[in-house]
Length: 175
Image (tube, rainbow, N blue to C red):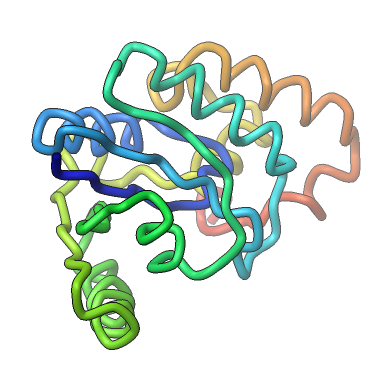
């Protein structure tokens, strides 16, 4: 059985993430989606909230399970008997970072390969950061994330009130 892990922060999960997970589920016999608990970035949602959103979004995939993790990705992969780490590539700038990660993981675990799936064209611009910014600024995110994530974002922004700007990293949508 070929097992793959698909790790990310998923803060929140987007339709682009779902596209990569769905395609990985068609390639590998089992995919363990790893929600990384300690990314080097400011998070809007707790680990538990992110895991639950990912589980709901991927519930239609019978060969996909979702777990949180906070150790090295290669350790997470080994724990599950995975021989493959799945990553998504959206734009050229992603390649440099993903190549660095793949080479580092290969050094740490020569028995585990990284497979990069190119984002579908309709999602090549999409990131969790962009979704959060658009949502915070009142833009329509209905086609960017599943309905339960739209609701979670709206509830989170309402709870943050005027402090939302300090909780969401702004990229360029305002410019």
